[in-house]
Structure formats: structure tokens, C-alpha cells
Length: 481
Image 1 (tube, rainbow, N blue to C red):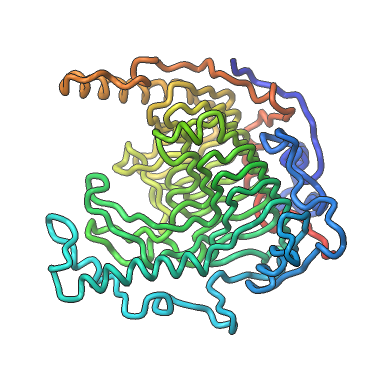
Image 2 (cartoon, helix red, strand yellow; image 1 turned 30 degrees about the horizontal axis):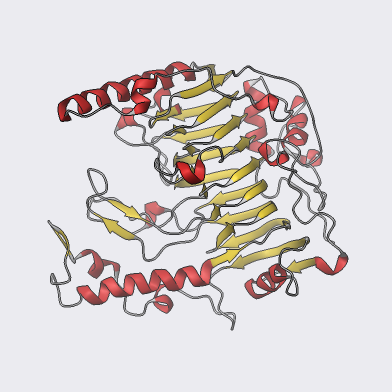
């Protein structure tokens, strides 16, 4: 059963350290209150403290400490002289470009698939779908799109091995056009970096995906696949210079989606903590679990803590959860229906935007999150969206600075979907799905306080201040080794 706790275990650098500052916030910025990173520090709050804890490259010998400033240097440091899984600490200086060729040149779309043209690609779709026969170039466009996508994957994907700490030096360190991949690895710490989501020049169009068709981009800014014990802290995730709003228009009259997730976790990823980070200007932000039928890999896993972060202009999936036991604590959410670059439209005003997505067999505990949504048609239904979940608990959250009953919103959405699922089953003469027969409950099957100690900010102003001033790259001091 879920209940609210205020038991404290504070430590420098983690959420608790930054949260502790909010009792007397300065008028502007974090100033002298900026915490300083210890390169050997591990996660001190959340699920990443379980399963033996998460301290990345802590204890690395001097020869396993690197300062890197380009892609080649990073790849060499990750290899660690042929011992990639030994503890190592890597300081990132400046921006590392995933598109950087060995000669230092930055690769573009035509380098990956010379001759590919998105307008020609789209012109090959008919009312019945794709056809190589629509134009004489259609077979070529189909092959070039796939070739370009595969070449892009080989170039932009950078795998982070086990027992690694990545630290950004200064407030301008980070990655651009890079898919940071955490794949079958464990014990990884990533702090004080800006990660700009890679642009998928070869995103595929599916006219049958949804009522209006959909784009399917391939690359996340950060991906975790069958990895465990991960701590992401003071990281800024963004679409940066390439918002989807500036992309070419697709057949549905909307811009092409050239980004996938900012940080997606799937295939049994487990024991993850995300603290003091910023997620800004993106569509599909954070997906936990890749399908309702993936119980063999995801059931009993996907244990994630999302605490003290700032979400602005993120249209959906902040997060969207399947299977996981997920703790969403003291986050600050901001969305505007009329934002010129990052507009967010909820179901109530003709869109699909939402903050918390409750998926199949998930168990989400939400505590003292601050949600703000403004503009025409903006209402509190944007806070939560239901996809077959039967358990959810919230306490102490706010919508536009006022207390909000998020549990009632979730229960109402569940009931709407339940009635639709039962009616569909009756019309088809089939059994209703199990989730529609289970019923909705706020008595979840786990309690975060029984897994780890944490502190809860119970004042709206403190949560807002922390989100605005103590999150993301640059809000953490990292000293050069």
C-alpha cells in the first residue's frame, strides 16, 4: 500500500542535496548553492541504490581517467585500453558530435544515402500504401531510406560499457547527433551533460499507424536495453536546433517526426534513477517497456525513480510506463497549448498530449509533482492518460498551483477505457481483456519508502523553484581532474 513519507537521507549531488537547497532559494539562479560533483559518487536515492547500488567508475585508477573532446577520443576512452568493463571516469569537454567522421568532417543526410529525397519517398505512397510501381524511382527511394538508416545507426550509436562514469566539464559539455546506448551493461553514471536528440533523416512513414498515419523515427537520444543500475543526474535532454516543428510536412499535413525518445528503457532494464535533469521541447519523451506482450522480459523489472526533474514542452511520455514499479517524485511539468515551437495539445483541445502515461501492468506512485498547463482549452485532464493500467497512486500534487486529485483523473480515464473495451468485446463475442475486469485501485502493490529512503518537498513553490533553477547541465559544478 502506498503512503506518503518524509523520511530523509540526504547526500551531496543527488536529488536530496539539491532539494535541500530549496528551503531558502536565492532570488535568481542557483548561485553559490550549486552543488559540486564528486567523480566517485554513486546514486544516493531511488531504485539505482538497490541491487548493490550504482557508482559507475568509482575507484578507477588514474590511468582509467580520461578527458575527451571529440568522438574518436570518447570511443577510445570507452574501450579503456581493451578493458571496457573496468571502472573508468570520462570527462567530456565541449560538444561531441556523433556525425563526426574520422577526418573531422561532420556528415550530413546525403553522406549516409546519396540521392535520397524525402519528397520522392513520400510520393510513392498510394491510397493502398507503398508501391514500388508508383514512380520509376520508388524502389530506389525505399532502398536508400533503409541504407541511410542503417548507416546512420552505425555512425551515431555509441555504446557505454559497464562501470563507467561520464561527467561534463562546464555548462557546455554534451552530445549532438548521438544515440547513447546502454545495452546489456550495468553500473553507469551520467552527469552534467546536454544531450541533443539525433535527427533521423530517414524516418519511415506508416499511413496505417493511427487515424492520420504516423512517422516512426528510429533513434533515441539515450536508450537502455537490458541494462541495469543506471544513474542519470543533471542532464539536459532536448531536440535542440532541430525541433520537429521545423521538419518537412508529411501526408497528414503535420511535420515529420524525426526524433524518437529522449530516454527510453526496455527489454528488462532495471534499477534506474533519473534526478535533477531537464527534458525540453520533445514529443515522445520517455518510454518504459516496449509492448504489452513483453512480460517475459519486462514483468518484475523496469524499476525506475524519476525525481526532481523539469519537463517543459514535452508532448507525451513523461513517462509512459508498462510493467514497471515507477516512482515519480517532485517533478515540475510545464506545457503551453500555444507555444510557437513546442505546443502541447491535450485530448481536451484536439491533441494527444499528456504528462503521465499509465500502461499495462504498471504500478506508478506519484508524489508532490507540480503540473502547469496554460492556453486555450488547457485543463487538468492532461496530467494523466490511461492505457490498460489497474494500479496508480498519487499524493500531494498540484495543477496550476492548486491541489489536484490525480487519482480521480486516472480512475475516470480507466473507467472510460474499460467501458469501451467491454463493449467492443461484447460486439465481437470475445472475452473482455483482463485489465478491464480487474478494476482500478489506488492501493498499489509496493511502497517506495520500503525500498529506499527519500525526502518529499511538500510545498508547490519549492518544487517549482527546484525545477527551474537546480536542474540540468550547468547546475552542477564538475572540477577538472
